[in-house]
Every structure is written in C-alpha cells, then in structure tokens.
Image (cartoon, rainbow, N blue to C red):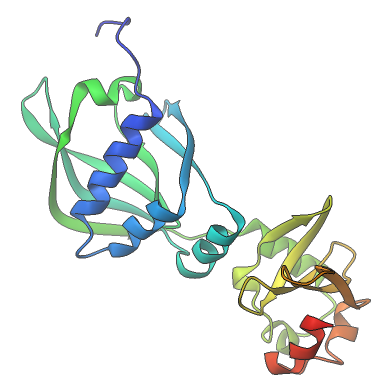
Length: 229
C-alpha cells in the first residue's frame, strides 16, 4: 500500500459510526442517541490486535445521561463494509462502551477509509457479546465505605458510582438524587450533598459514613431538605 496515502482521520470514523448507528436504529436506537450525546476527541491506531481506538468525551450534563442510561459494554458482530480491493462485503467486529463506538477491529487501521468504502455498509444478523463492566470508581468507594454493614451498602447506589472533581477535590457518588444532584463521599469518608444549582454546590452533611446513616434510613425523601440547605 502506498505509504504516502493519507491516513484515516477522525472525520472518517465519525462518518462510519453515524452510518452504522442509522443502520441499527430500528433495533438499537440507543446507539444513535449516544452519538448525539458525545463527541469524538481523537482516534489512535492499535496493533496486536489491529484496530482503531476511539476516544469520546461528554459535557457534564451529557455524562450524567450516559452514566444513568447507557451502562453497556459489548462487541457487535453483523456489520459488513465493502472492501474495495477484494470487491466483497467484509465483516467487521465493533466494540461499544456506553453505547458509543469505541473500537474497530481491522487490519491496516491507518488506511481504513482507503481499504473500505465507508458509504457501502450492510447489516446482517446482529449478535452482541456482552462484556463485564469494571468500574474503578466503585471499587474506590467500596474501600472508603468498608466500615458499613452489608445491609447499609445495599441502601446505596455504588453500581453507578463515578468520580466528580470540584475545585481540585475528588468526590465519589453514592446516591443519585436526580436532576444532576448527588450524595457523595471524599477519600476521607466524609459525606457531602452536591447540588449544581445551589449557591453552595458542595456541603458537608456527615463526618463519616456511619454518621450519614443516622439521617438516611434508605429513603431518598429523607434527604430532600438537606439537598437544598
């Protein structure tokens, strides 16, 4: 292959991802929704295995929606793209995280748009290989909350924990109070209410996790007043 040919760029991946999403819209509309909520920041070429890695980003509000409604991780099989050299539709394995295209498994990834006609894409029988999602922020929160009982842990929402940085401090969400507001802990175990609409967005509400359970017995309604104090 001519080494002077232009390499695949971000715009080619944006074009490809959108066309795949449109093909899948009737069976997997969430993929197109995820595209509308995200922005591709860059791409990188991988070797062993060969492919293209896609870096996505979100603004804070979009991230909340993605985090709440698009907790997925899977390989997708069933999409074929026209190989110009071989004159055939070639199956391509795609990897999605949070319903966003994150990796394309392909040889000669630098020349993806040259090897294939990105306007000629076919949908066959779609198969999903679901993968386990690892949440490092959840593991961090669990370590901070190790003094709690199993029953207390079950009253929290650690499956959806994510890290929030505010004024150079890190917080880990433990309850989603909706509308972009959270109950969160810091690495010292102090508990805060985070309210993005409040003049004082971050406020300490308990000095440790056990003290928090003196005001929270499992019903979020118990915390409504605290969220706006």
